[in-house]
Image 1: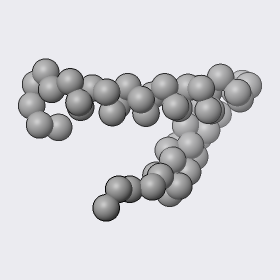
Image 2: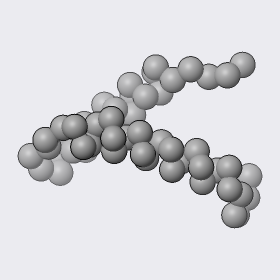
Image 3: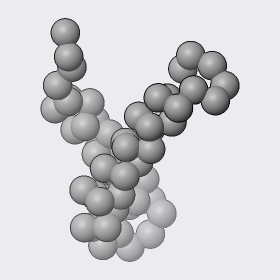
Image 4: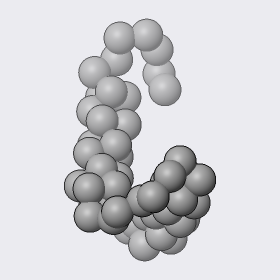
Length: 55
C-alpha cells in the first residue's frame, strides 16, 4: 500500500472481499467457524492460483 488514504488500495481489497463473499461464503453452508476458516483459506489459495496477473 502506498500510503494512508490512497483510494486505489481500498478499491483492490474491497473487490477481493466482495469476491470472497459472493463466490464462496454466501454459496456455502458452513456449520461453524472452523469450517468457515478452512473454506476461506481454500478460496484464497484458489483465488491466487487462478488469478491472472497483468504483465
